[in-house]
Image (cartoon, rainbow, N blue to C red; front, side, top):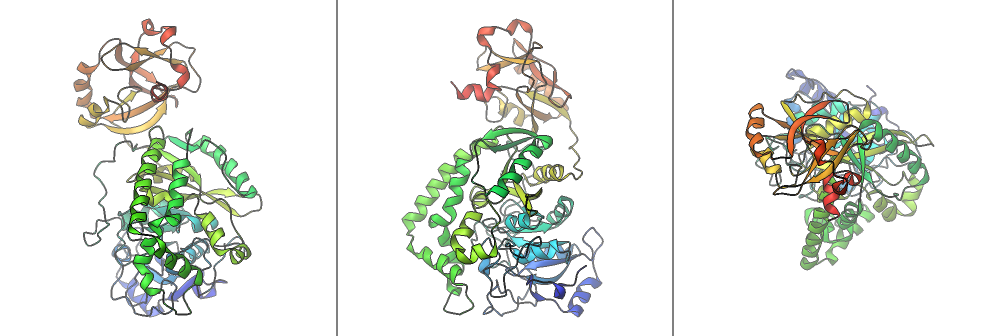
Length: 541
């Protein structure tokens, strides 16, 4: 392990004394984190050490560790120091610190990303196996992407923020930076725990929310070009090709996501930073002038502006939800480019603002997210993408991230699998029957080649799948549901002619029971195969 004092850049603000580290290492419980050293972003409390948030005027030592640090210590991990950050966690560049600017481990001329800059550098250089950061607007994912790391932003409230100096209390998340998804999973498992003393804490639901599959097989990607720098564009095209090898890819409108991202700083939401730490932004010369200007500038917003922003966000959230009806996760670049230190110095606000184009909206829209490496740009700099999914999809999302990086991920054991293509799809009228019977969405899928879809008669609009042999090679949209064995018996009386349960071949070559129709339903005047699925057909009506 590389000594923290030997780093060629200011990754650490303070280090625990060797006798403190030895004392903390004495009695560690058994487990995967026993004796493992970790670094802590310096807006998170470690007992006996000041939490500066990169503001030297803050010198009071923390009386006790943050909830997240305590959880890790209870699992045997040992904190060794506090890491550098964009002051008050306000920035995505890693340069807004009086302790010095960090740079990417791949290039001394390019930014490290922020605000969790020091944590990312410490992990990327091998000083520690993992580090804690925070992510309100991308502060964990951006430095992960710029340093070739895995950056996990859990669902809001899953990891308590008690003991974190707040940036935006309603949006702040404690995050992890690791070199592998496997390491991230171990650390996240230790961190998750409901904290009733945190007003924004939320317990992990016993069952996944509706629409969250246990096994993610469908990735959504933007349906149009992205505004990327040329080197980033080349790496993004390669990432899209890789996505095709990991899952089925569908294209969606990401306009609502990008519009929501702009609200974080362009609308009254920025005033939450003013309320959280504006009182600390006095005339002290150690306060970064850009941070002071951004936060104190939020005083221009009124209460009416705040409510207008909330209403606009609600409208955008409803539109963004549509992307997850037919997909498990959304794939986006983490940033539009990788700026140089010189570019940030020339335009500190504009360059920083652009970096949040694809990350600012995650917490506003209540999404879980993980940034993963996606190779290198043509110039050799690391390139990262992010996978985003609805809240509390954290476990399945990590499985998908592991498959992305080539790590092992075991498909969950199934009970009885039932493939549905019409009225039982998520959000459709008969889906409640599956939920009532104890069903859970197992995965999104498509039929194997050779199937066609027709409208059929019945009390509810519904389709019938017929294996005619000349259906599209790309198949037709399905959902596969995991049901208890008795559920099939309870479901049978609700199935009316001309539909019946029969074997249905999926796009991965496996077979499941499914709602199918016989060849008498293959009426060319009722053929809706060209739409690709029942939802797409309904959207045209």
